[in-house]
Image 1 (cartoon, helix red, strand yellow):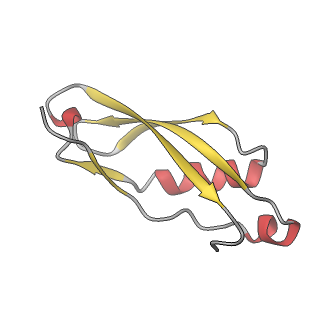
Image 2 (tube, helix red, strand yellow):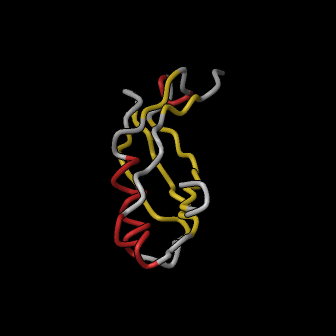
Length: 89
């Protein structure tokens, strides 16, 4: 059984969230198909801010998995935290 490697870029910080000082962690529940692309992206835990949740989901659409267990299975699910922190921005 292989190890799943997630290829992702950091989610862009929404300008409105920066202006308003919004920070938080969005936990996404992603389902990847055999091709390694996400076939379903759900919010498992909200940051409490709609714009941060949406930015995390939008970014996850471009994420991929390689060497994935999902390559031999029908699909694979993974939880991924996306941290929006103004001090790291």
